[in-house]
Image 1 (spheres, rainbow, N blue to C red):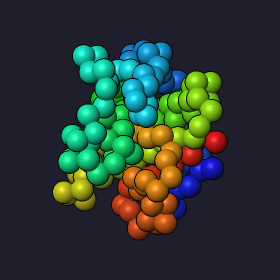
Image 2: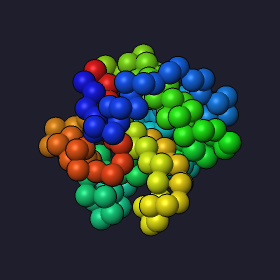
Image 3: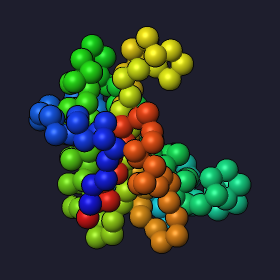
Image 4: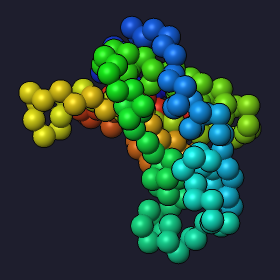
Length: 165
C-alpha cells in the first residue's frame, strides 16, 4: 500500500525511471540488511561492533524500536546526486524506493514502512532552493508508528509511505 501527500502524488504521477547512482546502490542496496534482535538495519548504517540492540538506550532516546530503526536507517539521497536536477533527484529517489521494496520482499516475509521525503525549497528561506531527498525505513510493528499517513496532507514535504506489501 502506498500513501502519499498531494505534492508527492504530482511527482509520482510524472515520474520517469532514472538509474540509481552506482555508489548509492553499492552503499545501500548491494550491501543489503542486517537483522539484530528484532530490528532490521541497512548493513551500511549498522555499527559492526554491536552485537545486540541496547533496549535501555533505545527507549531513552527513541521511545520504541520503530523510532530507533528510523534514526539508524536514515540517509540523504541528494548526497549521492550532486549536479542532478530536482526532477532527476525525485526520479532517482523513486527508483531507489522501488528497488528497496524489491530487495525487502526478496529478504523478508513481514512488511516494512519506507518513507521518502522530498523537499525542494529551504525550510528557512522560501527563496532558497535546497533540494533534499531523505529515505528511511522501519519494520512494521503493531502499536508503533513513526509517521501517521493522515498527516501527509499537512506537511510541506512530500512523503511517500510504502508498506512493503
